[in-house]
Image: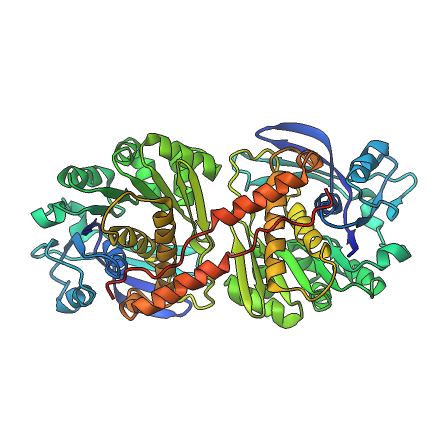
Length: 311
Length: 311
């Protein structure tokens, strides 16, 4: 099935304990589409400025991502984000956010992008996410990401949008914040009651958990000693998850399929953090993905035979 | 195999969003021994005061815990801890800590307790933990818990003690703090290099991870919407983990055995939080444990078949 992602396309300047990079290809839709491209034909929708050139397009094209709906804004500058990570990568400082062309972005999808079977709305203003949903009437599976900013300043609009999608993919803290419910299980139940049939809680170094009406699934993150740059890990996870779903030709979304999608998202995310920006995913092979998914299967495997209980 | 645990025996006063309890049976060795008693003959070593009466002993005896080495200090008062949990159970405020008889505790083990095959040193001053280790020459598997306080004020002594045990079971943040290494994989490797052959990182609501020289295993916590009182969950986990190991009659500790021990610890901990103090574990049955371990097996299960990669 075809997949469309709408979100940011950016340049990132990143400083981590592993080094400094003043200009990396970034943005949620970029990280997402590079990951999903391993599984499904992907179209990326988002705005760029004059500074976004042939080299950047080439990264996307080399992974087969269709960029026909990348909107070039004449005279504009591409979204720029700059951040610094401490030795503990969980502590991140945003230094600069220049929205640039992203500030006035109004998604206009081509007929081809509107026709996607699977649609991912990366983290943008929830009104805009709803505009995209209205354009994509054919989509059979839709998901959205969001952030604490929209929960704070556009809560009502965000809830309205969440009611319209099949799946929410956000950080676990955001699920709790959104529903004002500190217990994740209850918070996820509250989201399921809004409408979505799948809720995915991203948990950073702890992995990810998935809630549906009748199933719970969770996977730890793949244990990597070599974290270089975690930027985009969440979007890469979502790209692997949604891409894997879009790769299925037909039929209902089974619990088993969703679980495998979680494993593929987790595997992709674990590669993403091993190098700066998109570098590791650009160099990734399908064989490596398969090996890591298999390794993840072994990480949690145990034999649940009855224990010798004393009673 | 027989199991001895050395640690605190306490009264707790706990306030959570679910209610207030002014006097609960508590303490790390109590939570541990009630959990381990489902699997192995357990002897508990720790001091109590005159206020520790027949009812408290009866809780331990009803689960078959041997209390011969519980030291009654005439004229003394039992260790008392009081704390309050916020709506988000991850935020805990300690209100009162009265060490009482625990302040001058010097573990004196009987011949029977010294002869344990499996020994758990709950969180006490690391010099005292080493004293116990010296008394227990026969133990075939030893583990210890600790806390940030000892990492801060008795780092050298703690490291000396860790070198002597087979297994470290602490919170993941403590492994990072102990080794001054923010990446958990590297931090656990650093502990393995000190001597232990197993490192278990307790991760609260995210579950637990286990590192050995050639294997990594992790399990999410069992997803419970009904958290009433998380006090003692970590000790209950350790009790399930160590008890399961002690239940094995012989032979080497296989990776498969350690994984099943992790699952049993995780299951026990998930029950512990469902009621105040020791109430839930007191009412627990072996059948319920088996069901929850099986449920945990399903939580992380997926089919790692090769994905349909586009390459």
